[in-house]
Image 1 (tube, rainbow, N blue to C red):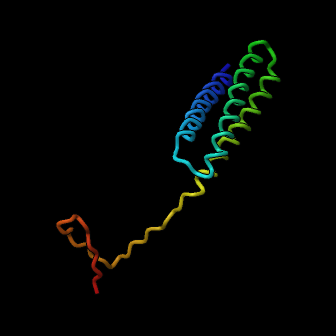
Image 2 (image 1 turned 180 degrees about the vertical axis):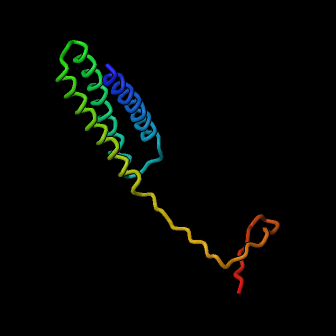
Image 3 (image 1 turned 135 degrees about the vertical axis):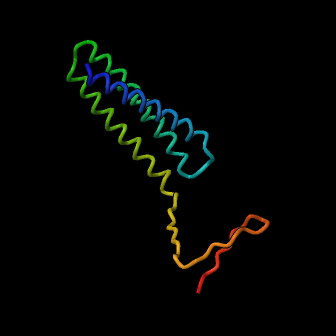
Amino acid sequence: VVHLLGALLAFALGLAYFWVQAWLSYYSPPSHDRKWVVLVRVIICSLCTCLVICMLVLYGTGFRSESAICEWALVMCFFALFAIFAAEFRHIDCHKLTIQKKQKMNGSDASGVWTIQEIH
């Protein structure tokens, strides 16, 4: 019972998160990836919803092994949904900020711009 409650909470909250993510992807600004990401995300979320319902019905009717199969299929679908984030995050660039030790910060000017001067 504890396992089923934990799985239900994890899958229900996870599925709600991915449905919100599908909705946000649909209303996001147009991009090349958005064309296929939204469709794939909605298809997999629909499959996950069916699997959650099947898992609960099978468990309730006494088919524990079949319910476990639905649970594992659901986990694999969740992995696929997480993998789709790679298509959206591949456009994010990370930059390294390097701070030199031998610099003195001057106050800002009237426009609020800070200036940095090197100390020799």
